Length: 196
Image 1 (spheres, rainbow, N blue to C red):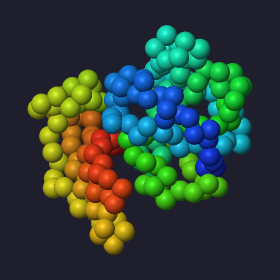
Image 2: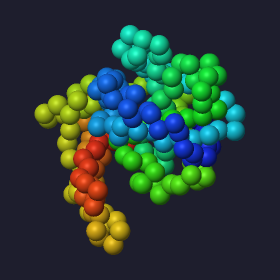
Image 3: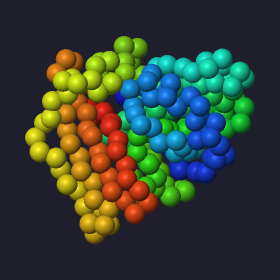
């Protein structure tokens, strides 16, 4: 496991808009859905070349860039490093910069501000793979069995409750958590993978 330490910073503010047309492709290929349509941006001290688990091709995206994606974790939360190939080659943000995607609003969930330090864990083994099997990633009927009772987690003095329900795949054994949030800003319904 490689650990990268980055500093939270502002991006260009265009990732959500640019990725919107291909978000369903990213969700399908990553097994993470629904993805939040923005990125958490981290400045690294040194370049980190993304070794993609999957890509979105130029033809699928905008005709000019291929997008590379590599699975990672931040404080146990499943995420994706998103890197356009132009950035990988040194243009724009460059390779000493991470743009992270997740099913959770990472800034809010982890209480991050510009200047906060974040550790990103990246599995560099050649045999790494997407979490779970196709059946559990697609939430097919009967694929997941609930483990225990749902956890009720109060945030903001109970004004923003969250319910976490843990599941295991009946086919491959992969573990997942289903998160339902009720916030003043709206309701959230997310899935993310858990370590085995």
